[in-house]
Length: 113
Image (tube, rainbow, N blue to C red; front, side, top):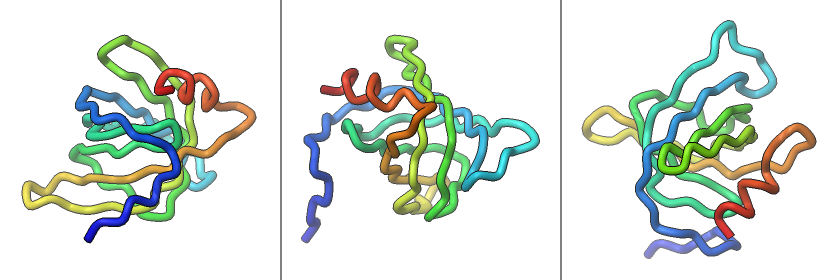
């Protein structure tokens, strides 16, 4: 049986999302990696992404997130808690968002309140 570990209520939403990964675990990338996917569910504290690019479990991602529906942009940090590969060779990843000085974490939380 599935046990919910989130402490905040999540909203079921399936919307296009664009994620530009700028760095992973503190290492700046030579060029940003664009992750195109969709949110399967979201909360104030996390996001679950589904797309074609693999992300390593345990990585800390510094990223820009754009929600296509309203063109809102957020600079966020996320800790990759889990990753699963689908039978279609796509990936589902669960990120726990991390509050940070140079992030839009407060605005993100307000957006999904």
